[in-house]
Image (cartoon, rainbow, N blue to C red; front, side, top):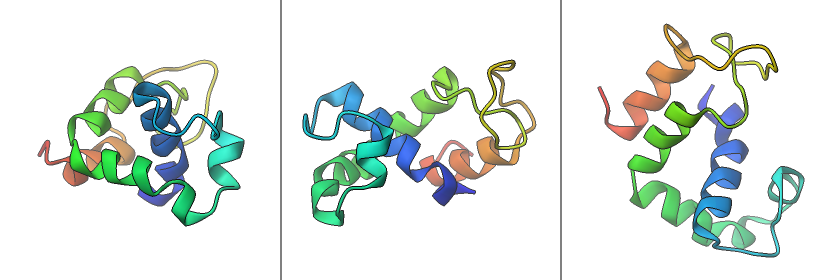
Length: 91
């Protein structure tokens, strides 16, 4: 499940911290080469608060089943939250 959200997290991190202005959106992140996102990845892994903030803000409207939704903005009880929480050290 985490890897399904990987690009969302990279895009979120890049936008929040203005790391690579050439990668402007999720499509750019998805089509990028590993070296293009290296600095973004390093920032994401160096600051566990980024994942916590992503969970709280839910900027991509991920529902509790792990799907994008325009109807709901909650994570309670979701496997995604549990897995991301474990990775970010929230547990």
